[in-house]
Image 1: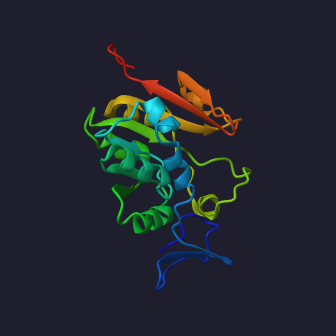
Image 2: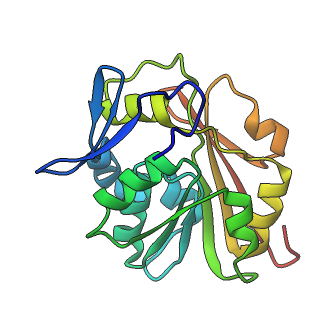
Length: 210
């Protein structure tokens, strides 16, 4: 596979006895569920569920799949398959490997373009959790992988327009504290978690539209 950015010389995908592995410079990564246990523990209290008013049978699109932790949680919660869009070919390949037995359909591509190909009102909720700033410290090796190999998603007004076109109920956006993405896109609902590291925006469709 050709490295997806100029600085990725030496990047390799290796099939080992245990799993698909990404090797780059002096590091190696495999798919990892990350903080999936914290989402499962939050359950109905998680902002994805609360802000999206998610319930069993809902259809969800995750526009920034990453390794698929959010998508797995939402698939389990709704009981429906989740469409996960990942712009990075490397990360999408790892996600597809790791999610092979989960109810997540992985599509590699730009979220705006993928959404544009979906019929209007074809899903209930569209979510996005774009890559956090590189200076945020984490203890998760899976997040280290996304920092090193991930591709910043392009979430702009064109993306928002497509998300609102396909979503019947809500478009949800997560952002890091200190960023201004929610303000730039005009998110009407902004909530900050108690940890003060993350903020959430929500657009909800009403009787008269957005």
